[in-house]
Image 1 (cartoon, rainbow, N blue to C red):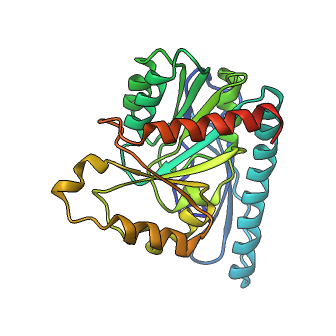
Image 2 (cartoon, rainbow, N blue to C red):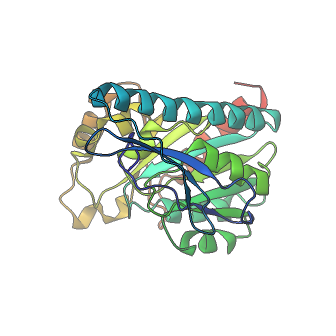
Length: 281
């Protein structure tokens, strides 16, 4: 298990990367008896394991150190991504949500509506399948599929590797669609400019209070599927109040990705981000 978030080790696959081209990840795991196991994973043809066994009684201290090491390594790759994106003046958006919020539908609608005016590309994160990447490519936008296997979130190294197969769209938007999960993605900086959490009205209004880290790290909350409100007993003001209890400065946009309601505000928010990226903001 990953000691930071509890997800399984790698098994990552990225479009365009052949075996042995930088797909190796190092993971450290702690067994119940305090043993530290360091694993070097080759993700395409099985696993090579190096075990460094330390039988000690300082398990909590060792666990904290490993968490710090993993997050520090992630931070180094995030810094690389930030430099690459700044060099191409690309506005990068980390899209996060629980499964089924409609973030892929929002992406498809956005890519279709803005295709003529804005360069756009997508890094698509899922544990398995390329279903969402296929939907995105059908719009004409380039997409790199990242399958995380047992992993429950994207990390910065995965984004670095994806950018190696598909350069960021200069002067446009790179959408990074994270794995559907309201917990783990919040803890991993990908080098993005802004974080967006998508919440649908088919979910509970208490999501921000139940998963505060996600909303505390977000810059924008998109409330999706508002066309369904007449058929649901969903309290939008309660949702927004909970989100702003966690983060008072959180921006909120209400949309229907299928009906098109509120998308002008969403597109204006993206345009402002593109302008800021152009000037280094």
